Length: 259
Image 1 (tube, rainbow, N blue to C red):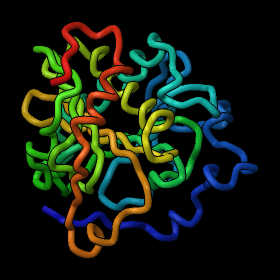
Image 2: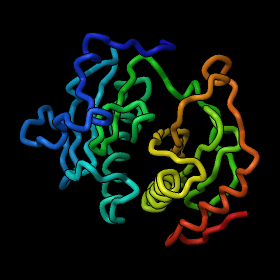
Image 3: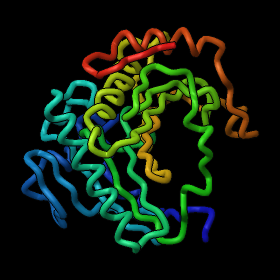
Image 4: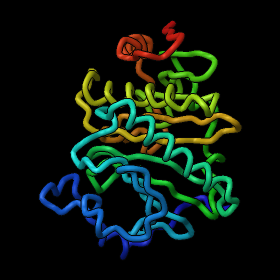
């Protein structure tokens, strides 16, 4: 098994960029020009990534909507649930194919997220020679409870992977994706609109650990040098206070608790 992904530089420099370069044409808005489409549901489109920058992988793009300036926290509940069901279904299909050591489902939003296209989208990446789960510990998803019932847990990491504030949603029952979606949307909205630090970027990282489906929602800022140089995450001293604040924005989920 490999430990590093290998980046194709000559492909990478050709990729379009519309997050900072706001006058550039959005490639996802020109639906009539899209190629290698895999699946479509209303305005949601899964297609092969035109710019395959990673060797020994399958790279796909999941366009979430035809509204270029929209964002996950703004979706109607109907569209939110449709997007997440679509994404998880296709992600798990690639997982079950047996063609990959592991398969990643992830989303970038904002200038500090590592993305290049503003239009709301996710990515499904099949890794032929790397199992991402070898780098994951279950303690990465333990935290101060925001909401918990027998189907889903929503918490704020007490041992964050990068540091500071990382939200986790742990889904125990695949039939309850809507509850997971509500928690993810609440976290995204809190990060962008209610955080005590100004933040315009976040990532979603999905994991399949045993029978659980887990999503980590990570606000993105300039990464601390203590983590870059020494892999030392920092844990803030007000996690419980923040978890209580987030719980006030979470609605319409049964058995909501914040302890």
